[in-house]
Image (cartoon, rainbow, N blue to C red; front, side, top):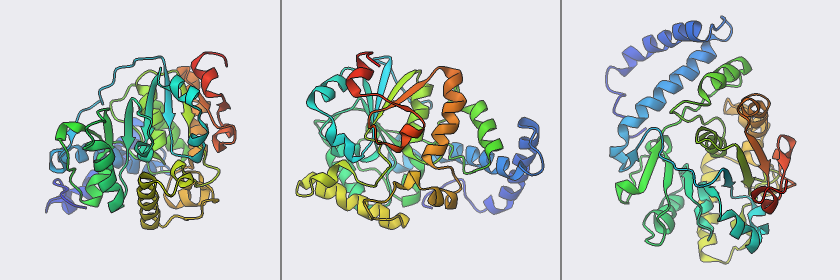
Length: 327
């Protein structure tokens, strides 16, 4: 971990005592029982780390604002993933998406469509680091807001090579647990009306949290397939920009030790992989939210791809019907 300023020489002395304090806080704040108290404390520890990571914003040449600034221009939001079904979107549908707010997730900036903003968690790929600067951050024709996760930049030891005002950094709570008592209690207390975002198993679920915090009640997920690991750039391997995307993705997958088999289920939906990472799969986590939090808040999420694994949780809606209220 590079440049993490609060981990000084006294950290190893006060950290164990601080964790004991979080155990006490968990017992009081969540009325945690003995079996769950360790899991509650671990999440509260992550809450603390999320706050501490903020102190390094200037060191990596970013601009940190809490909460992230956002002005809604529509009552609906389209979240754009990188699944291969993005290539099935027609020109007419892209024109419709342009009329409402939209957020591109991670490598979506390789697509020619310009969303309202981007949410990016930069992996360990050196190609991805160079590409995000070339195609987005230092591209004079692109000026849409870019939100980037600060922890990934810290852990890779990277400094952004662009105007510091170009990137708005965010530091989410990662909530590393599969304990349903902890997850339900934490979501009930912090998912809505809280300045800090929650990231559980994917950038997508963090973007959904941002959308709910921003007040969107109708959200469409497009290009979120999960049934395989194919991306929209895989269909155009001879295109220079897509070549870079393929290389960046391969480097990220290799660094994370994820399967490079394009026919395999997406990593965020892989139950065994998520168990090893101490989190729920994206499908299970969205299911938890949909049965409680979204229902209570009146949030309705739809999925544009009828073959997406998330249709196990949310209803399918084609893009034009969603935007034109024809559902």
